[in-house]
Image (cartoon, rainbow, N blue to C red):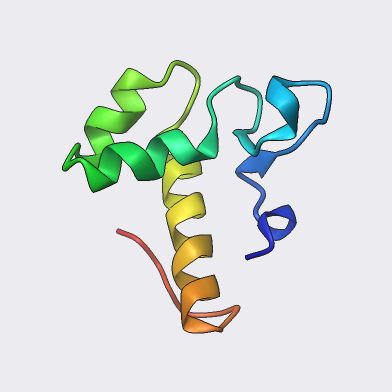
Amino acid sequence: MNWADCSAVQRDTQRLSGVWLFRGTRVPLAALFDNLQDDVSLTECVDLFTGVTIEQARLALEHAARSAAGSTDGARIT
């Protein structure tokens, strides 16, 4: 999966060992998926992660869905 194509995240080797973070935050992208896997709602995740917006979370999920489907168009999280 190429996260470089997702505008909601960024990677900087000088921040948190270079893991993918939500843009403008120190929140690892993996934290979203870990919490969703533990049945935390998307809204609750955003409330937990200071600086992460609902739009960023949706963009990340849409990117993951498109990547999993092998497509660059279509998937929209509402």
